[in-house]
Image (cartoon, rainbow, N blue to C red):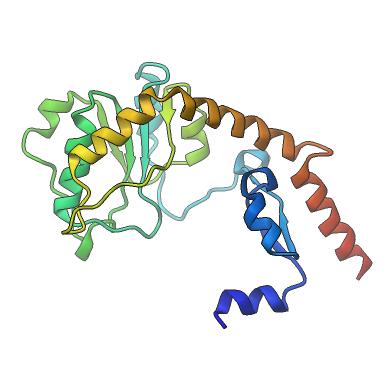
Length: 216
């Protein structure tokens, strides 16, 4: 039995930072799960920091200078790593689209913790359209009017494990032009908002959790 199965069996409750309308098939498989998300740091009046990494405050003024709804936000995650070849393919794939992009790339993202080397002519080709930062408050970035896209699509890797620039161009172009994706994203936004208000699914699950804690 894997560790996750053991945790599920011995736990009275499992709090999940998702909402039922998004992950209903998975939630239905785990009887003691309580989907109470999405939880937003912006809902906390103290605005607690979400990272030990220093915030690059220049991102805000850069976003203010960009056209509304055109910036592609790229977040590689807290554990992902890249080699130089993959970094080059991603950079070239993004810059070839002609869209401004904000990329959060940690100093330890590169294998061997070496600093990434930007492709020759990068600055000239992007004309300042590409912005790289160490860390930014993601919710603030996503709420900015200049940001258009932050949706996950699976990339096809070549035999050498590298995602080629043409694959990146194809998938991002699809995001930019597929009205069905935009429509579905807006529907999920509405559902996520409704589940947090009084009577919503996440609100009810959280109230249930509080009531059961009080009854102990």
